[in-house]
Image 1 (tube, rainbow, N blue to C red):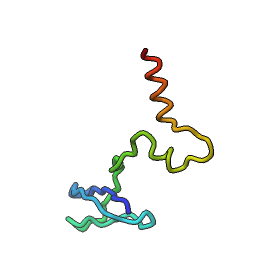
Image 2 (image 1 turned 90 degrees about the vertical axis):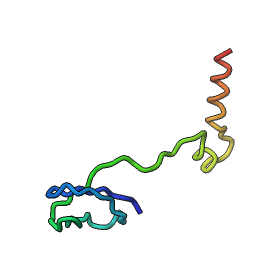
Image 3 (image 1 turned 45 degrees about the vertical axis):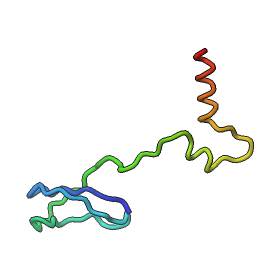
Image 4 (image 1 turned 30 degrees about the horizontal axis):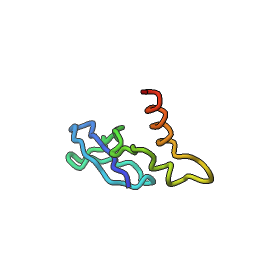
Amino acid sequence: MPLYEYRCGGCEHQFEALQKMSDDPLVHCPACDEAKLRKLISAVGFRLKGDGWYETDFKTGTKRNIAESTKNKSTENSD
């Protein structure tokens, strides 16, 4: 379940809420109990990076490791 950030337009209280994607957005502020909450847009909490987590998981047939072929080309060009 994703974390969503909210800020109250009345008292400026800001907090995170763990909700299902199918849940309705929260409306009432837990600090002042006014119906002035707004959902904020925030950065994602994780990054997918590395030399090929996706390449090895979904590789079929005779496909090469793209990360390895890129590294080999860069070392060949640096000579």
